Image (cartoon, helix red, strand yellow):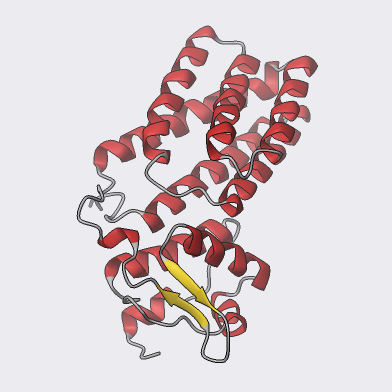
Length: 244
């Protein structure tokens, strides 16, 4: 594959701890920008994992997500490999870009979610946290059915606000989840993405059980950043305008 400075940046090492989501963003953004053109073949899996400094299992998950979203195609055989789709979704004329209004929704969600987990770590009852664990287990059984997964996901995040024991925060969380649904509907939801999301849910509940508010906030920030990376990689416009 021919390289230039911009393309070299695509294959720079990915930073932890959101390697899966950042890999989806990196490759999806390169397709969007035309750095990886339709029909282009990606480097072999072993070489690409080494360049990005991620595990091959993480790379496979990211590639599978992009194949299932229609951005990449995988071909077997001697001349096979992973290729950019001839008409990835980003080339469709009716694809709506993610604008600054959408970023306002993501920021609003982050503020509400962070405050909720901080208070839930202090105030959540054992019964409320048990319910969150039940919802995590339920989502594990819904990875192949996004509509069911999303309904349970909404209930999980509202459950965090309930554990925070703040009626006003509960109302704000319900509003934030409603607004997020419109954004989440814009992207594909392969099981690999849902699995990673639910793993983060489980880690979050562990932090809440320990009463560790700062850790819970960190876990929630990683969780929300995962959504941002996926949106950035699979939608056709830069997420945020740079400011001085």
